[in-house]
Image (cartoon, rainbow, N blue to C red):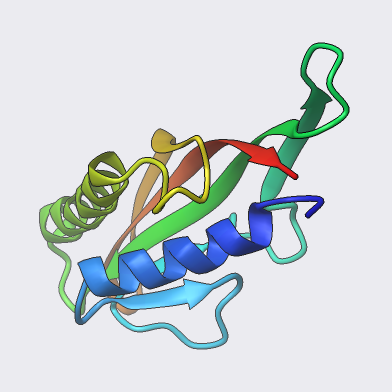
Length: 146
């Protein structure tokens, strides 16, 4: 296989849907969203790259190749009232649960050498629909292809 990216995206979608019952977990760009939502493989801007990858050959071996990549994801919460604290706390609660799932099994069932949630960027705003909070985060992955 040339890359573990497709399998890892599938694994994250499945894992996080189980970890956050009642939260919409979306594969890529959404068409419609619920009040609490996690986007796997989406930066918030349509058409923007969501995975950056580097493949290298380790030492003199021809296979397997080392693959390191980052998957950009978002978590968002929107409420009908203006309480920014409520959506801020909720979005961090969701991402903490996702990080906990990765920490419990950083190999995603043996699919990769290691996956971990790292970088994040937070934004909050008042909209016509109420307070909104968005947390962009990255899942860093180290894997070997065969």
